[in-house]
Length: 198
Image (spheres, rainbow, N blue to C red):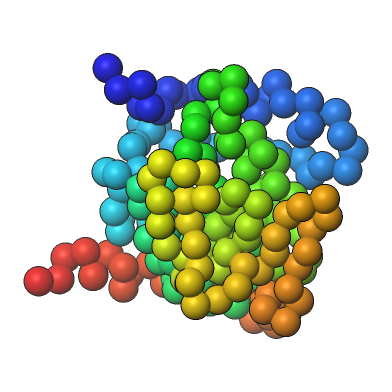
């Protein structure tokens, strides 16, 4: 079988066991939602991206931010699509994932997940982003550049919004942090129409 195939319920169980999320009062409270059936990201398309956007719209006023964990194959496409679907977005939507699965002793998944949660609770970034390998990238400027290294995503024409070292360095002049006065709008129809165009 496929060793990278998603397993229903595994991620939720893992999140509940992460002491970084459950024992640290500085960390945001995390509520997990898994889709059933789970999908390989290589099988996801515009209809699935529209579903993600609508679910965020439905739950928008119940949470401070959102983390979307998925495979890397179509992450850049999904994140970019959502960035164009939302109108008046005033909260962070952070995509993340990993090159090495969580179950492996050495992996990049745990750190990516923790930092994605931290940025999703931030009040300095109010847009759709990708957090991967110590960098927060604007979704509509990101692309996958490597399948075999941890630095899987890059933003060739825009510096990262933030970089992680000993400290978090945010580039304030590039982040969208202005809270809109209008209510959130979501327009997934165009992406569904695009998937049916010739």
